Image (tube, rainbow, N blue to C red; front, side):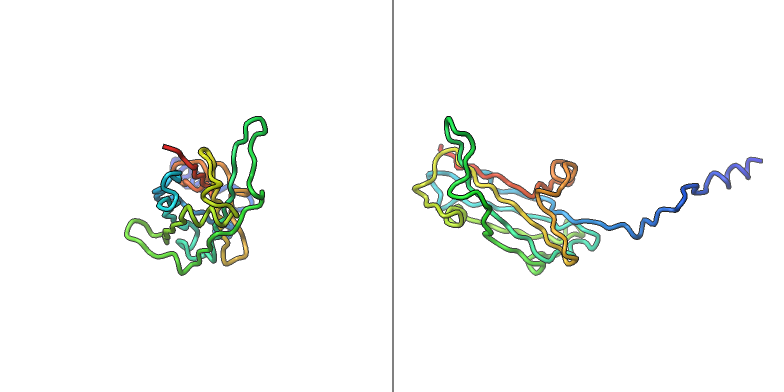
Length: 180
C-alpha cells in the first residue's frame, strides 16, 4: 500500500501539462555599477554619467541587438512645477550594439560600460552650461531592442524587475546638477 502511495504521489495531475520549454522570455539590463549620481555645477566639464550593465536573457545576453540611450532635461520651477526644457521629448544620445557587450569573469552574462559626459547631455537637449541651474535633473532612459524585434524599456518593465535589488533594472536613471 505504501509503495502505491509513493508512486502515485509523484504524478503531475495538471491538465494540460504546461510546456515550460515553450515560454517566451524577455530581457533586461541589470545595473552592475553606477559610478556617478550627479553633475557638479562647478565642474560640468569633468562630470560624467557612467554605468556598467549586464544583459540578462535566455541566451546569456546574446539576444541584444541595440541599447538606445535617451536623455531629457527637467527643472522644477517655483509656482509652476516640473518643466521639461527645452522640449519634452527624449533625445537619443548614444546607441550600443551587441558588439559593445563582452564576456566577463563575474557572471555568464555579457556586460558593457559606457560614459556620457555632462557636456554631451547638455548639448543633446539643446542647452548650454550657462543654462544649468542647481537642482536641474537629467533623465537617462534605456531601450533594449532584441533580435526578435521586441523592445524593453521603462514603460513596459514591471516593478519587480525595475525596483528589486537582485534585478536592479530600472531602465531609467536620474542625474542631478548639484551645487556644492
